[in-house]
Length: 558
Image 1 (cartoon, helix red, strand yellow):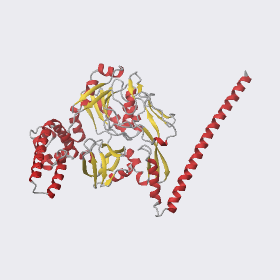
Image 2 (tube, one colour; image 1 turned 180 degrees about the vertical axis):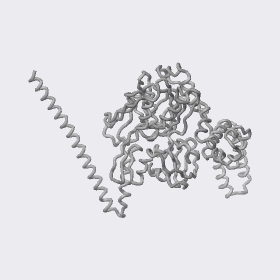
Image 3 (cartoon, helix red, strand yellow; image 1 turned 30 degrees about the horizontal axis):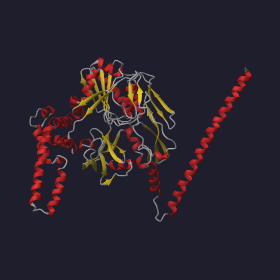
Image 4 (cartoon, one colour; image 1 turned 120 degrees about the vertical axis):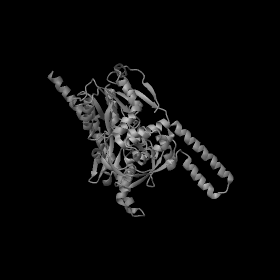
């Protein structure tokens, strides 16, 4: 027996030595390859600096070479110089000077994820999905994300001109926006939307989010909330730690939350709920998401869905599930590098798509599964982003309302006519409000009123200069102008109810801030109303979280 044990121990020792020897050999091969590559890069760099016909700015050359190399990777892998390191602190400090835009590079275009609510960009009417083609006349094509951010930010009180291209119409507009101190308020509003249902709006995840959320939960429960609606729509994310701390408030201790996996699929970190939940299991929850809900907000929604703790309502989320680490290069620079992916309890990855140049990979990537199972046995979809349990479809189009909002017409009207009213109630009871607003739009030529009017004016000016006495041209322009006026009137009548709703929402904001605006707009919010229907029907709520049935599709008209 002893001989057998010794023989087995010897075999294990040989296997272990062989394994570590193989591992050591692989590591040495990698280091040798790195050394050869570094030598090639340094040789090219040396000859460029010493032999090129023009004398080069060495720091600029270094920065451009590094950034050029990183262009082949995802947009979240970035090189930070001293002037850029401020970006790393904003997410936790919650304050910066700028216009209040969340932006990213999508297929080479500088694109708006969303404006921060109440910010100058929000009031100007910049939407999720808008493309920023120029910043103060400087084209953004090929620009690094951090360079664009630095151009947009600036001293409080100064102006920046953003040239915006609309994603559907391809129309291009210049927005002159006055910079201000942007305080990132994670919870702009919470309150009761029903005697037994509380509502909580979270727009970002910073270090203050868990505490603010806990205070909001306690306040809502004190007001009689038996169920909760958590609104994460247009929430671009933020700190992972904040999303985990928030989940601790809703889930029992010891449950799987998030894991991160590296290049080989090996789990690097595995997070579990560690605190005693603040909410009783008797409190039912719905979570609202949309296409601009990303990162930490997707983690919260996905984890609650996987544990069957909440019904998810809305549209497919953004799909940002890459994890970054910050590595200091020296005292004035750092590398933020994507080194893993987020996975939620069902095993789903959140990342929607990859950005890396496939030619750089040493092996083919494995295709991940697309169908997963929640704790209670429900089937949920993978493949990136979070698919809601209840899908909300919005097929309505409001081109005139969007044009007015785009040029800040609603906010401007509220500002300029506020002296005519003493309260929001007085505004809402004014029978002439819409006729006043229609006159205001026409007199101030808000957004050219409809797409095409500005283009018509430019064409008219150009042609009239060449032949201002051409009776046929003059008649043609008159016919087109009359048709546009008819279209404007028809559009105003068609969109009247929606425009009036938006207008009153801005007056509510003007008089009562975020609280007043939310209280008003939530009354007709289809996702909120659907949530109320679910939360006030115990059987419906339970059936959604327990029956592996096909998802419901809800058509919505705003």
